[in-house]
Length: 167
Image (cartoon, rainbow, N blue to C red; front, side, top):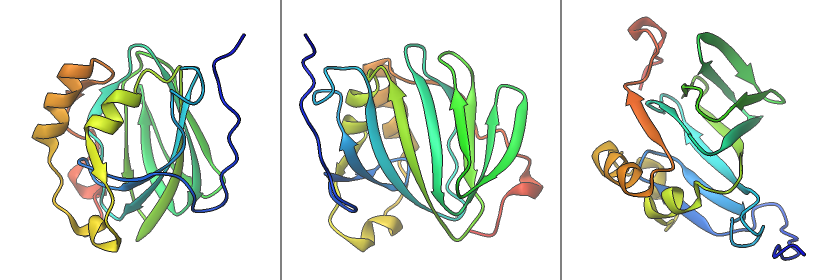
């Protein structure tokens, strides 16, 4: 029998957390609520936000672009993905993304929900719209990644300097 609990969340509902790597997460389903099967959060981002090249050894990660446009690299493949687009980074495959539009919203899905502790430990409760302007703290993200083992940070963002939008 599943240990998942029923979840119904309206638009905008869910725990809001500011991620130390940039962006505000609105949690739609935490691993504890899904019996560890998966986690889902909406990620509100601003232009220029980049992730370092990284991989998840124990989870597949899907992104659905709700609004805006990102540049994504998965393995050796790099493409622009706009609203309505979808990506899948299988476990162990290096990947990264960069926000190209003034703002973007992504729906992030990880299965199983092994990354829950990483995202919670590398964030804090969001206090409002000022969170988008809070400084990114990649050293803190790196330390938490090392503690939780949910993310392997492999290097800096893999995007050419000429591709980066004005920040």
